[in-house]
Structure formats: structure tokens, C-alpha cells
Image 1 (tube, one colour):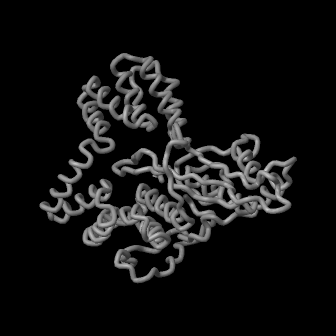
Image 2 (cartoon, helix red, strand yellow):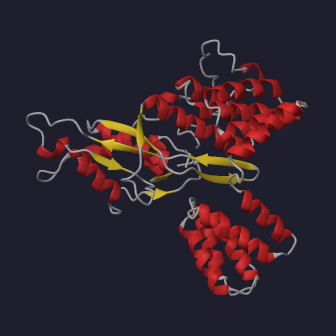
Image 3 (cartoon, one colour):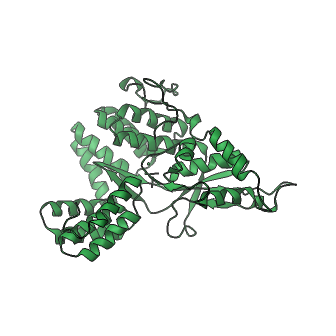
Length: 384
């Protein structure tokens, strides 16, 4: 989950700029004076807050349970039943609990947050779990996003006298399950880490939208919520870098690298900062470490495939796109470009198959509809 690890408008729109979040402890990572106030509230208290509509739903739709069904099973049924919540997965941006409930849609993190909020309204204990899955990536323009995965467990406490017998049962809610969840490891994370994940997602989405001032305040709040969440430090470093504050970027990324010395995302960003600062020896040393740790980084074959496509070498492009599909079979854009290559090589059946896979694995309604439209035009020689 563009937690994948991958994606946020606030529920309450305010006129003008929102108030600056309270000052953090004097953390040398922050440089508030370099950024304008955020355009919307950066308020952690809103993330899990249940709306009145959510409270009514719990009271009227789930509250009166039939038979001996436990509370967590009733909530699980509502999440699964299209006739009830009618949830759709859409990674366009990260919503808080109330926004996800109102829209009936969200990315993995949004839907986990919404479910936790509903569960707590019902008196169900929740436990958040960060699942160790193979790292997946997405991109938007020249930005690359590493996507993690999080789910939650409902219940698990022994039932009290007078409660339904299966209220003690623990159920796992996972909105984007990997192929085999049972064999994977996970670790419990608390509310503060989930809040940090939410704020970091909002920061990354703001960067992608070109709103660096907003991105700064979201990343800052992510670090305030969980100072040990190194992903947010990396995001803050990227924000400083894109705004041109290279010394600040280097300081933040160096601290992050001290915590995770083998983190290739941090190594890449810090190498780029050193290069921009003219510190070429340091940049070269990090690039050599990267080459040893990750000789073929994410999107390496894909970018070479795009270069081959620009040169009209569609056979080479097909070979390179197929390599990316092999190591990341659930990323829609790899399937799409493989379909483009196959169409240009006169292989319409293969193109149709991979375009259907691109549509099936798309993470936003916009991409799904785009691929669906192209699938209808598959008879033409070109898709792009």
C-alpha cells in the first residue's frame, strides 16, 4: 500500500491558508521559516475521527446484530458485502476515516484507517500490522514511490460475561492481500506510526502535485508523530532538495542513512544531493554502494525499454518490458507498455492480454477507465 508504501483533500475546507501546526521540539531537521503555511489543515486528530454519518451507520446498520454473530464478524461482513458499504479500492490519494467512509473508496491505508475508526465506534479492539512483502514501486512523472503494506486485526480479547461467544475471535482485514498472506511476517505498529504513514503519504502526494509547502508540513507532522519512521525523513529530504535547500536535504538524509545504512532509496537521494552540491567524491562513493546493493534498481529495465521504444526498437523494448513484468507482475504500467510493444510488433492477442492485465491491476479509477478505453480500441496498430 503507496505505503505499497503508495495514495487527500481535507474534509473541512478553510478559506485562505490553514494555521501552522504547533512547533515541534527544537528538532534540527525542521526549517519552518523556509516554507509558507499549509493550504489545508495538518491535524492528526482528524485522521481517525468518526463522522456523524459513521456513527449513524454503526448504530443503524450494524448495531442490532442478528443471532450470535460477533461484532467483528458483523463489521467484516459489512466491509465485504457490496450491498452494504460498497467499498472500492482507489489509490489516487490518501483519505482520512471520514473522507474514505463518505466516498466509499480509498487506498489500502485509507480503508484500514476507516475500518479502525468504525471498529472503535463498535467497541472492537484493533491491532495494526505492517506486513513484510516484497517491495513494490509506482511512479508519477520523475517521482518514484516505494509502496508498503499494512492491515489490521479486529478483536482478539476474551469475551466478557454477557457478550456473544465469538466476540473473542480475531479477524484479519486486508484490503490488498498479497497472493499468500499466511506465509508472510509482520510486526505490530501503533497509532502513531499509522498517523506517520498517513502524513507521509499526504506529503508524497503533495510533492507529486507540486505543492512543496504543503508537503513540508505533512512530512514534518509525520516525523513529529513517529520520529523513528525513517521513511518520513527521506521524504523531507526530497522536499528540501526540490526546493533547492541542499544543505538541509543533506542533513536530513544523512541522519536517515545513519538509521538505515542499506536503504537504497535514501542512498539514491543523498547521492543526488551530493552531486548537486558538487561533492562528487561522496556522490560517487554512494553510487558504488548502490551498485553493489542493487545492480538493477526498480524501473531500470522499464526505463531502458522506453529508450528503446523512442528509437523504434520495439523488439528490444518488448524484451525489457517483459523483464519488468516478470519481477513486478502486479504493476499496471509495465503491462501497458508491454502491450504497446506487442501491438507495434503485430501481436494483437498478446497486446490485448497485457492491456487487460494493466486494467485489472490498475490502482485508480482514472487508470482503469483509460486502459478499458484502450482495450476497446485494440484493433488499431498503436495504443499510445
